[in-house]
Amino acid sequence: MSIWEYANPKKFMQTSAVVLPFVAGLAGICLLVGLVWGFFLTPDDYKQGSTVKIIYLHVPAAMMAINAWVMMLVTSLIWLVRRHHVSALAAKAAAPVGLTFTVIALVTGALWGQPMWGTWWAWDPRLTSFLILTLFYMGYIALWAAIEDPDTAADLTAVLCLVGSVFALLSRYAVLFWNQGLHQGASLSMDKKENVADVFWLPLLVCIAGFVLLFVALVLVRTRTEIRARRLSALLSRERLA
Image 1 (cartoon, rainbow, N blue to C red):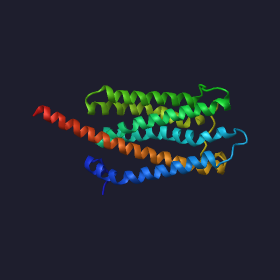
Image 2: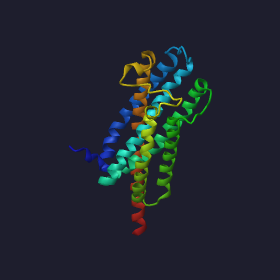
Image 3: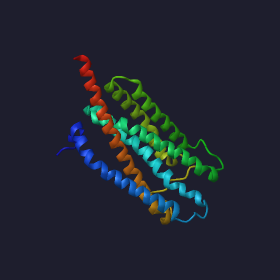
Image 4: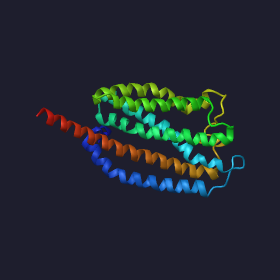
């Protein structure tokens, strides 16, 4: 069995209908457990107090904002190379979800940064690249809406996605590229010394799992909706020609 079978809309709809309830259910469980554990069952930090608990929203949202764009990049490349409509529609479906995660990351980052840095915003390399990534999300969504022909829209948005991937990369690695800046290093790292303490780290992993599963569930729902909308549009076009 080839993975490209799922590029067939009928196969995708059948498979996603089975997978979606399990993914959505696991997302709900992980989010409930992770957020309750993190916000109510972990102690205050000795430096940041209760403010540190914003980490359970900020870090997963920031990670998924970047990874959502990476997913859009991959599916856009598949569209450009293999012309599978499901991949283009999946990229389109992921954009509003990724934008929502980006806004959550920016807002929670401001709430976290104000008591730590004494300001709601700083033109820090990572923050600036993240803001630009937000604008790319908005431009991507607007471009899909502005172009009537879906294949042309898919082509142009795929090119925009390639360009925006530079800022997705900068958002992820800006702290490593530039030593200056207020933003801290990674909260999770292969180097255990850079990780947050275990008392915060374990519930954070559960929250991240919840955000990943939530993203998958939402993209599946939205992709299914886009496929149905495309089918409906094709049927209406045929009726007009008949």
